[in-house]
Length: 504
Image 1 (cartoon, rainbow, N blue to C red):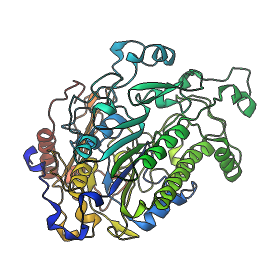
Image 2: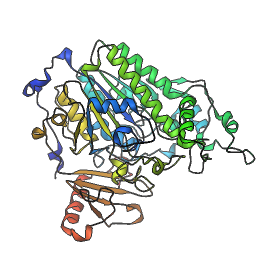
Image 3: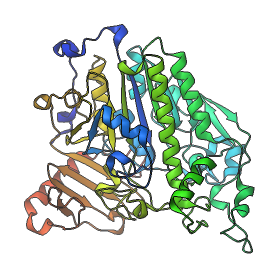
Image 4: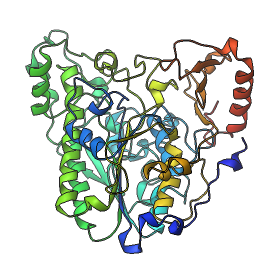
């Protein structure tokens, strides 16, 4: 398929009178993006150990997607696909590149002094992001949480890419701790009452007992970033409740390091019982109760979701608000997390090689729940195949503006229950140019083709029939050479040179 076939021109909503929109009645839109949340990490997708009642209630009041995909198996490129509507073969940012040529980019003390060491590759100036599209349509826009699409003072910061307000982490590496020394409010640093502690260097002494909780006390800090982010987010809602707003809540939870409010940790210690401590062998910070803390991070966030919904209902905003809840990629494998123990992959494998950083289903198929009162049927479910690049066309159609060129297709007909009117992708394409691994994948109907370990010289494609083999355990490439040949051609046609020169 040629790239031009992906471009979608959105017509006015006069053809869809069911929405009954006027400029003043346009819906508020809230996009909630969790970080490293697996397909099976919440109750409405089968999780049995972690409590998520408020997110599960959203599922009861809205639609559950079973075949929704992220744009990439890691943070920055996934966010780039979401923000621009261009898939990872066309996206400006395709890898979590930290631009180490700048200096000590992994040294938290150095980043504290030299903010030019923060952040990732920036989006280009004047990129048409979702934020800019919504701004141009008259929405007040806010982003709260993690950014990762442009270092401080670059052209890629949130305020230069379509967001009126931003509060949170500019840099993904800073987000490796939930007790940072600073966050950003718009373009300026806001210093917190926390010491500079590199979580990757926070270790117990050789004579300290890892089973004694007291030995972890010296790493405790005062201000938990997620509390502050939530407060700013709620203020944004309060300040803009009289006009349409677009809110992106890009929480870093439950990305490691494992850090959560003590009341939630103790809730799960009582539920799970004692457990082996995590002493830092797989990077990030140490943790006395890793299972309890991972669960606590998710339940803490679920509690915040409940508070936001309560606020929307109290202000009579809920009925005219579209809420989209999802995750940026599949579950991780490091930092003390234990995805197999939680069955974080749900229907899919979640151990190393199958979740985050990889293009198997566990790495890219993500939970997605969408709620819009009187528009989306409560308790409904869809198997429509869609991806992050489809979000921009969908929002453009909802607010009656012409969508900029994207690789996406609006899934608004699916939201409104109009299955017959829903256009489908001929195929979806992903590439992830990790310098040690390198992956490419195609999804077309029931077929999934994937090439892994490209950096090690592998060129063999694995082929899976997802209808019969959801966990990708039986490679049938040898039985279908025609499909393999077609997928190879589509992979070539779908990829343009990476502007940051880290591509495959």
